[in-house]
Image (cartoon, rainbow, N blue to C red):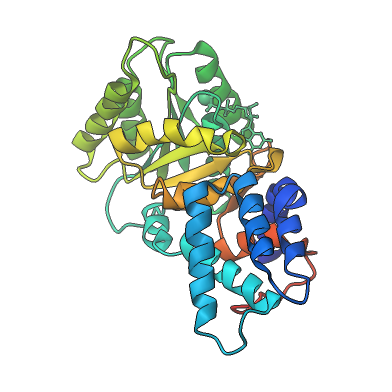
Length: 325
Ligand SMILES: Nc1nc2c(ncn2[C@@H]2O[C@H](COP(=O)(O)OP(=O)(O)O)[C@@H](O)[C@H]2O)c(=O)[nH]1
Ligand SMILES: [Mg+2]
């Protein structure tokens, strides 16, 4: 994927959030000086964009501290620059290691096993199709596992995607054991020399069957086939649930320990500020963002592209990257 199309996709993903909030925040930096009232307005705007109260305070506090040591003082442009730098450094670091977990060439035999979790409707199955497409575009052989056996429609939906993309799907009956599906998927991947297996899971909460126990069993079973599997555990979050989605997400991170997040439906919401909380409060690096409903609508996450696109609409022609603005 070229840089222009990555930029376009992120652009498409953040449009609503920018139009509703961050574009307005950028406007606050256009006056001659930044008053206390302006900082307050900025704070309110970030909170309204679902950045979260604690995360907003931390970002503004650190941006101010960053400015204190500078001779050019508190001019609005320096302040905007400082805020952007804080945002990039909040979102950016630590994700290289996690991105490495998604790399199929590990110098070991057997497929890379990616386990995908998240509440119902968050966008798991769609994101799995996109991820499969992403690997397929790199010439990788992928197999999908339909371990969301709780809903018959869940299995069918993955099969439809598999059919569309020409990617095999391992599935059992509706109501079958998800761990058995994961087992068979990994075995099929091994037998057919696949590079990656991606396993879909159930996301019902508040039912009698304990979901977290079921997911732990899926993990254990994969671990028996390869002590390092699942190599990557990804949590799918629906961006449009904003701050409200964080509590549910925490149930997964606490019970299962996830490596990173895919933030789906960024295109459909003005709550894109939630990415900062996902990083700071859930401790999850964002690896991909979903920017639409087709298999192509997935952008590998880039902190700087994201932050720049939040504040300002940029055409794809501004091809040179802003070197540490
Ligand atoms: N606009 C938009 N819709 C999405 C995105 N990801 C998923 N969806 C839609 O969200 C709905 C739920 O997705 P699904 O993958 O079935 O969620 P699951 O229950 O977690 O497997 C579907 O209608 C998808 O088309 C996205 O990035 N953008
Ligand atoms: Mg699903």
